Length: 276
Image 1 (cartoon, rainbow, N blue to C red):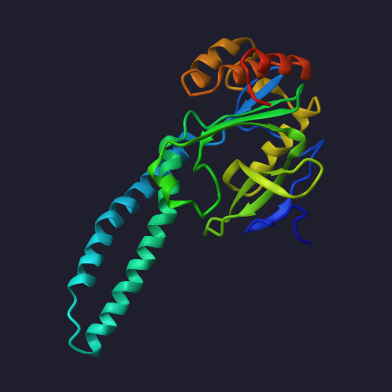
Image 2: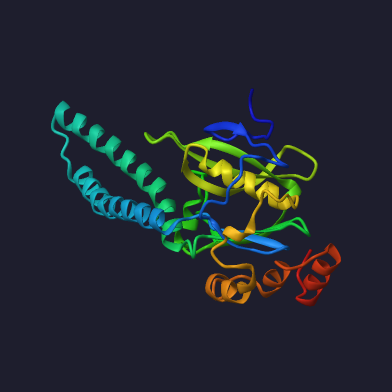
């Protein structure tokens, strides 16, 4: 049975159930939680360093190999069938290398510029979700090459939890890694207009445990225990100082984390003249 969300994502495994979920655990991803909002990190530092090292090595290698191939092709003399065959082989290799480089650059950028675990914030009283992340923190493949000139490009947005729906995808690696994606749908439809990387490249059902925990938290279910957070509830100021401050979060958004009603949220946006 295919995904009910359109367009269906490449590598789709299944749609995730929303609402109360008994498959639940924040693992070590829960940074902070109180009665209004919770914060989860999506990128472990160890994984970030690992993938950054691999993508750096490949990027640097291709940076030198591609010009060498271009030079070989440009200086190749056509004096027989063998030369033409060599030209075709070199040209095909060049295209493959450029294609690989094109796919590596986003991975390099997103690991280099992902900050403090790329936290995602869920406010259960206003039903809002907030992200501040690298533009390249994504499972997409096709990018406008011009955005590669802006490696630190970021996406800072507010979403409605009601419009976000979970989907599990396979990355077809030898390690059978699974990623959970939040599909952003047009209100009241299954037509996706955006996506958020909720939990990337996890073994087995590990990321589904976090999906279950967030769902329980959003409906105030006791299965979502906030006591396992890195920062205790009474250390909100310390959490904001060490995780949020200096990371480009808009002031209105930081205040909106703690909004308890839609009216309070509206007043915050009016205070900072945020366009609705």
